[in-house]
Length: 116
Length: 396
Image (cartoon, rainbow over all chains, first blue to last red; front, side, top):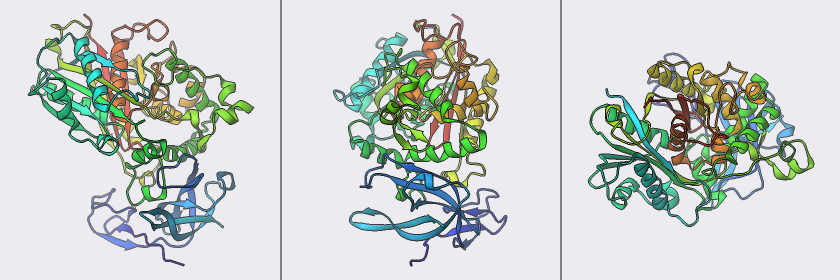
């Protein structure tokens, strides 16, 4: 299985965790960060099933959500579920790094969550 | 700083306008506003044009330069202002500051968008380009998707129900049916969109828990206003409408980085700034145009502006407090829900509607009686760049 290729940034001054990257800390404007990787499982914060997809997605629907990893990193990802009624906020998800779309004939990798 | 008045307002009917180019729509709306002001062949010092997608959809840039040429406004200063779906509000802000500073006297502000030129698939992708290019966009997130995730959180935290969302949809479609400028001039029945066999067909899920009639349509359209210093306004024919207050605030690009994603901080801050400038309180506002790209946003914004306490906006909508004749009439135009949402036009169209309201020009079934003050919220991104205007009728 591929490693999750997301880097989050912890402010060295105040400890706030950022993802995506900011040049200055959102809380204290600090400019030095410690790089960190998402760790462990993730807790589902919110989700939806999108039925009107944008150009580039040749499928009927897409389940998508935001989850928080055990070390505090929060990120959006696609969810492996047939429908949103199989999901509830707060449930534990396993994360993986897989193709999330195809662009110019090549796979683009990203986060996928799957209920445990 | 000088007081600034709106002396002319005009727009073209929103909808699917296959017969017009973007430039034609911008020109028609501009001429309507200039004629409404009674400016004749008088000088326009500057033009601010709100547009989000000309470069992407029409493959046309520098459109403000084209517009002044087409309208024979040369050598007026001109630029295009892009701020996502708040491009119209930002164009109006630039016009306000230009006149208030004393740099220019007569300014034309126009907003326009032509979105139906491409398929829904492409239009959805175009709007999604405002999401974060690495952390959001690659996943296929759309603005309805963002709104769906926000709605779920809002429902869980504040007990908003689908019935409350339906109340907003029904109200705005009912008012849109009375507005000749609206994209969707069609009232709906509750049975047609909620808890019936018809509703399953008519009102499918677009991004749960949101359904088709929770979302605004994809529209073409343009709207324009003319500004000048208040002291000059009496030279023109129409009742001047003072821009009594303006506010703008930003928030994090991604929803996940907000301490509380249900807290639309940029809306609260923008509204607070605009109301403070105008020396008014939310209860002093007689009519409001809120950015109901999704029904949940009308409810959430009505709370964040301060019309209702947090968690009370949905109940207020259900109880009819936001209808014409209610405590605070919201989106009497039909809102984005029914008037439509040509993204760059919306912020200007909201101001046009409030100008018509404050000049007491609308038919009885749409006019807020004796309206003296109005407020607009133009919501960019998913609440990451928001403008607010407070307008006030100047007694003739």
